[in-house]
Length: 509
Image (cartoon, rainbow, N blue to C red; front, side):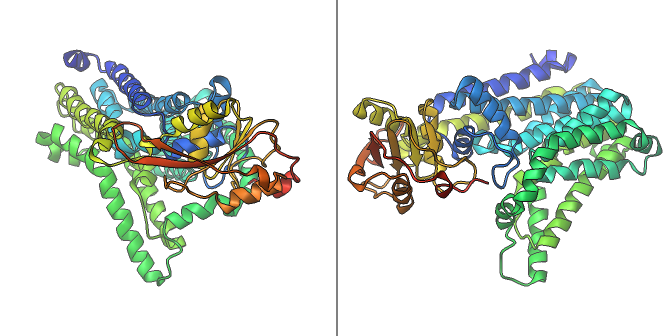
């Protein structure tokens, strides 16, 4: 097979597709319970909204569409995530093909995308919006280089669509097209593409895609930015100079961690030719290199402006993903022999990503053997099955204490609307048209009492206190034979009373 890859580098696309199919299969096999981002998607996929809080809505809209067509399930969520990652690799390969004449280097650049930990590790644990943004970056990269090399109305329209999709996938995506424009300014032939009348069509397409969510941002600017700024450490009560130094160190450290693995893999495969590759350049190495530096420079300026002190690799991967293409361009510019490069590169990357996938997948099964648990071991499916069996019916509506619980319940009860009190990513809580299930958990503690927020919601719905009879479940963990049990509490209200006005029950974004 590997000899075939050397002769037919396009085979790499089929191998990447096989890898993501393996990711889907293993995720469905290891556990029915959801991680945090998966629970979030299962919950918000009930609602079609212009905005969902601190994250742009593109991924949510895709999940809503799949859920509407096939129902809420772990399968639809896993298929969407890995499908977008595959498309990310596919469009990245198409972009590489536009600017690389050596098809072996095209294959290497495409596989190089999989060397970033947020893609082969974090995405297989718990990522969503970053995955959509990675797809958008690759789509933009393909549209951009095609516009530069083979300008056409289609290329400009595709570029506008990619930018529109990108800005509603992740807000920091906007740095990528901005950097691309600045990067081609010193190149006269490429700079001329900016003054083509077709760029107005691209701008119009981008505006049409981004406008609905843009309107929502104007009305909800605080909700769109608050969480991100808090995660970046802007609220720390220290001097500006201290924040600036911490921010610079955090950015450098995150950049080195994020770029280390692709750099190591390229260095190992082309170790004999590193001095020649280092000195080589052409106009495309200059353009892509400038894009990478401009993106990182813009991140630094933003961090200094807002006083940010934290930076994560997953926030930088949208920019660092340009690195494999840049390195492949440097290799081609150097003129070194790449005849035997695909096989060792593919073997090394395959070992890293498949080993990681097996370890990540096995943790839900293996860790309980040693008394260690994760969210994938929590028996949410057993909870739903037990309640339905005991009560003899499925609820028409569920009110859950948090989105982790609500999302897990949602994937098991396809016919029930699930709400979480005080959540801005949903419509107002409705009056139930049938049995109402109210469920909570205090990190698995047995005999946990219902949170005050749930009791307030039930009172607002007009449920009499006599109907609020808490019931407790102590259920075995998934996998392993641990004697411990995970505790849930719930109310089953067969005939809820008439509710109070819905405007007092929730605060939609």
